[in-house]
Image (tube, rainbow, N blue to C red; front, side):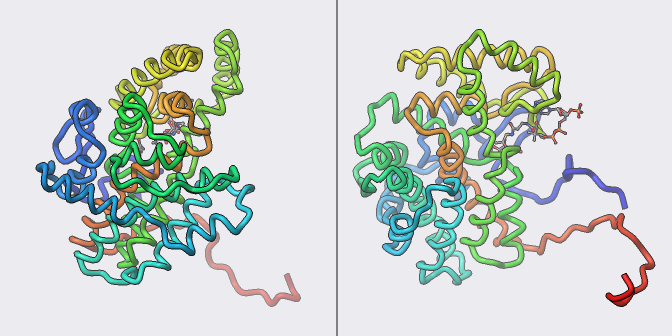
Length: 371
Ligand SMILES: CC(=O)SCCNC(=O)CCNC(=O)[C@H](O)C(C)(C)COP(=O)(O)OP(=O)(O)OC[C@H]1O[C@@H](n2cnc3c(N)ncnc32)[C@H](O)[C@@H]1OP(=O)(O)O
Ligand SMILES: O=C([O-])CC(=O)C(=O)O
């Protein structure tokens, strides 16, 4: 059997949700550059779930549904409040709490399309409330209830900081959500599809996906980019730090990609956002250091930055703690996972590849006392 390590280049499904062709990313046929410039996150959620942009009434309906479903079941909030979770990574807490949402959804086991769509709305709304609530609770602060008057991006920042964000913050965060919403058959989306292809439920699919996103080769890279920037500390330390890492074949987080060769089209948007926010905050050094790292890594290894690289300094300049970067990725990617889960149910077949066995053969059982 021929084995393709890491399934590189293997086409595992058809999909009408997003595509990456010749380094161009589209959501349902709309280029990411166009969407990043013009679309709100809620429009993108609608687009991913319906493959068409909403008209005003459809958009208002989705916004209303998200607002109406944003509250957390009391036992989930109680779990976040009553247990000492301070030693667990926020992605571990998120994975557990999202799984718990399924425990308290009386519709969790229903498999019809209408119930599944309702679960998608709930999950998209609740993952935002959950992430913001946990971020406050772990600091001994009271969670802030969602504000139905605010859009999705503004509401997240409001629930996180107990302050209505300004227009610049809303615009930057909304764009970051748009840029992270979907990405063809990335590892976490594939995980979700494998899970629900057994006809397991939506909550199981997104819980599995969160587990896959957590890893530093995938969504966990953004947190590690910020840790690296903080460790480097100052612009003049960048060159020796990166040269040393490259000489020792240490992977630089936020660089490289399995599919893009010429570069990740999302990175340029995040780079410009990083420039603007870092300057606005009087923290230009994070942007300058990032640019220097890019020059060194791309210059010597021909590895362009991916979506995780400049998102780190963007979130940092929005005042967000670095271990929340990957949960925030999950808040956005929830929309893509759900689109893929619904698409998988629509045309399902069990996903079950083969393994090329390389272990021992022709073994004979030896009784335990003779081993
Ligand atoms: C949202 C996302 O998931 S985007 C990706 C986020 N992940 C990261 O940023 C982590 C750092 N990057 C990486 O580990 C990889 O580039 C991945 C996981 C993204 C892609 O992995 P793969 O397609 O399997 O590439 P692979 O890891 O085999 O790398 C190919 C070569 O480039 C090198 N390379 C790849 N990425 C990097 C990097 N970030 N820093 C240094 N070298 C790298 C590898 O060491 C390898 O070199 P070799 O052939 O001399 O052994
Ligand atoms: O597609 C991938 O392999 C990883 C990625 O960039 C994403 O999930 O956004």
